Image (cartoon, rainbow over all chains, first blue to last red; front, side, top):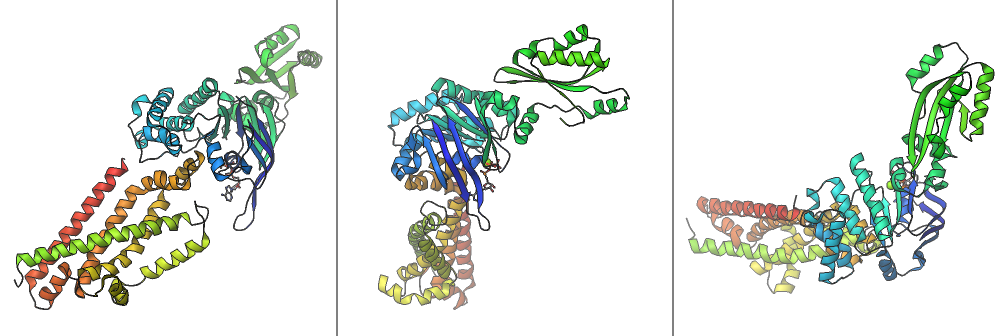
Length: 343
Length: 216
Ligand SMILES: Nc1ncnc2c1ncn2[C@@H]1O[C@H](COP(=O)(O)OP(=O)(O)OP(=O)(O)O)[C@@H](O)[C@H]1O
Ligand SMILES: [Mg+2]
């Protein structure tokens, strides 16, 4: 549905040119919710703005629904944009117009018939749950409500693609959750392909099917959300994973350990999917002559698959510990010795 | 008092005509120039360095000439347009040349104040440059634009009084001819009083209208 083909974007600044996108290849399939995550300045906004040519790529090709946008005339491009909705971090609504007119705007711009416009707008307002706010002004709405108006407006022309530029970054966690659920509903009920960029891991975890990690203008990892985040290959990805899954031993626990003179056997055990449901530790404690001390535990969910993370200390006979470790390895569970207070 | 009520009403009417007519024309000129100043700048809807540079410099030149000098300097032009260089109609010409560029700057300012995100949203939904201006930027700028127009109108009231000094008619003429040259203090205070009320009234109307379209 959306294809980036060797897209590079260079901003000719006052002094040095800035390479915001560096040879980006990306493929978003129809019906997907695709997330792009990256830190500030990674080039996320540049990336999403290249999809509807708010920013023109310096080189490379952008295809949306089979159209090479860069080859279109100004008029053809305007028509093509009706198939691409967009919502923004700061909503970008018209403060001087009512909610109704704001949502109707894309249709008025497209010169839609009055009766049809009315019906479509009311349907959309009902869909986003603001049917009673049609005559309010944006100033009278909360942030979450404004974003609902933004979503309704973006959907007015029945687009095939919805672009979300940090759509939830200006909202509190509760509202963020509700807006993300609404986006999921948009995806499921209208079959709209969604490309969203964010710096919040939670937004990705909540609704995305696939994710790409953008760092300094390059895509460093891409794939299903579960694959990318359960086995991060790069430091950037690992950092994002850590933002939802704290996996360092708390300092207080760590200092306790340092006081012990006993040989330290501290391991990190990562459970994925089914294995998260098995009583591994109690089995070990029963089968082998080792004591298990849980230092830290955490379990999170990615795309409905549990992902657990335990830091444990084994104590007891060296031989027994070795055997216990072998047993864990046989279960195809990732286990690693932890040496210092770094993950 | 050396003047009768009739003369005062007449003078007030002349002032209103001078301000009203020159406001209408200078607004139209200012709107076109102001919009051009915005859309021709770098990265905007109709980027055009030549047009922008010429307009920008031209407006600055006009804006730096004091009204009293402008009035005298454009006498040949005034004569060409209205056939005479004295009277109410003759005063209107320099008033338009004075307020037009001023209003252009005020409109430019109001348009530039509009959140760039609004234009972005408009572009994302495939609006034409014309639609972006008419449906998005101007309505969003309207509230601040009305305050600007109010300031310009009050400026024109002041200019009309000055025009009176060179035989333009109106309240300024009355104040100078009778209040100043013939030492009639009552006429002087009366005209000043009327001007104060006018300015106050205009400002209140402007504030009210601006608030109404703001909807906050
Ligand atoms: N219009 C512009 N002119 C010049 N440089 C720009 C422009 N827009 C972005 N940049 C530069 O390009 C780089 C990427 O910017 P971009 O806005 O795409 O990052 P981002 O990932 O969206 O960051 P953030 O999370 O802060 O929004 C930055 O170094 C930025 O300074
Ligand atoms: Mg950004």
